[in-house]
Length: 211
Image (tube, rainbow, N blue to C red):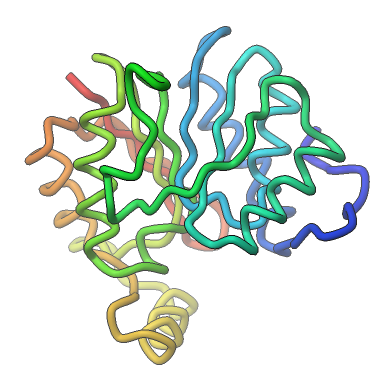
């Protein structure tokens, strides 16, 4: 269900997509109804967008990424395996909500998706993600996040501790975020924490709702 047929010319691929696409889809699918509009931030290679739009055929999926190489890869996946419901990628920076598509040009959206974004970006990206989601989501719309987090009452897995050290070595502004801080900034922007789902490899799926 979540396998793509082949690697198109010019497309990038990430091994983690093959491992996490199906578990993510199980949490993601109930959040959207037929005809829903989805905005994905930091779509990266574009594999998630291609997979999820193939499965959720009645959902309009808008991928985005500020990196030109990533957008070329998204387009390669879209051209090879995307349906009419997978839209062209836009140049959008999560840290700059003014760069986001918004009404009346496009949206409002039923769902905003950010997979493996928060820990591989400066804190300003998380701030922008919450501010932007509060603007572009419909009332009752959801923000879906996936990735590893630090939790006050949960011991940090050794694999996540090692991953965190590696991220900070690459860029001191990166790293696993404290879940309570993420919840707090979401609440400051009118997004209510709704659900926490444990995922493979010590990751979490989080759902916030615009009231």
